[in-house]
Length: 340
Image (cartoon, rainbow, N blue to C red; front, side, top):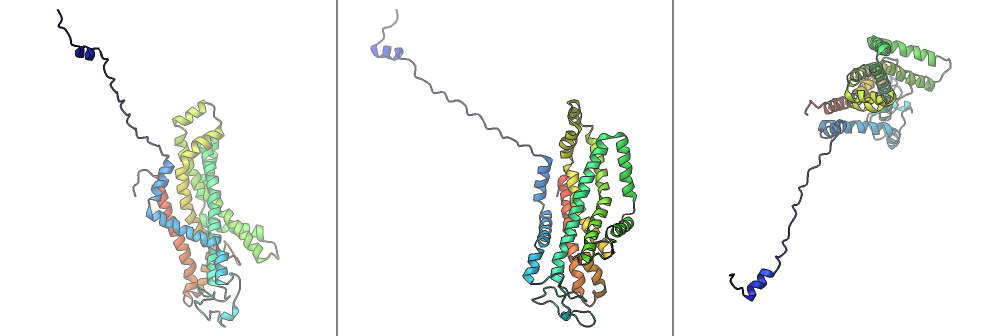
């Protein structure tokens, strides 16, 4: 027989069990890794480079000087083409130095304000270098893409043209070609100095563009020859993607690094080329304010008036040095094997 249960015990035994609160485990948050493109990584590395940022700041200062040259000359109250013959002695030397009216003094022989000539002189250097860089980059990338991707006789012909342009003596042919263009375009009798200066400006850009695209075209062609054998290009061909889309949507984004490096290194070289050709007499001409023209005219006065020579020399040196260091930083930023 079972033992008798009291009323209290029977009540406890008959009660349903208390509900147990079950706490669901909180899922752990997984860290989401955002993939970055090589270009974005390169620009992040470039922003951390102090030398690159300082050089970029120097370049921006010169760019602002060129853009706001009329405003800066107006602040001084002078013009780059106005002669001050009353400030020149009988031997052609200035009778004043640095004053509140002429911040850098005046030019020997003609008496033009040196500060106004200097700020305006930054314009042709940057315009010529920027225009030639854009033209040569477009030509070089396009011809390199076509030669490397199409292959066959197209590649042979374009490669022969590239090698032919690269084999020409740059300085000799640049002087000869510039002289021929000037004679053809500006040989009209009775042409004004402004018209001749405009023709020289166009001919200088044309000559530098003709000799500047071949190096980038060869570089792009070599990169395309290696990229066209990759799987994503083969898949695009199998899917029937048009050649234009393969070139500009598949290949071109993978060529950003060499193009950026080429552009950053081309700017300082074209600035030096413009000043050098102008100094040799086949570049820009009066009345265009140019650092190359100032150096050419200041050679005969460097002892009596050294500031006349050193102003354009320092301008070209600082600008070219900053762009060269910036170009090296861009090259290192786009190269994953380097650490700066």
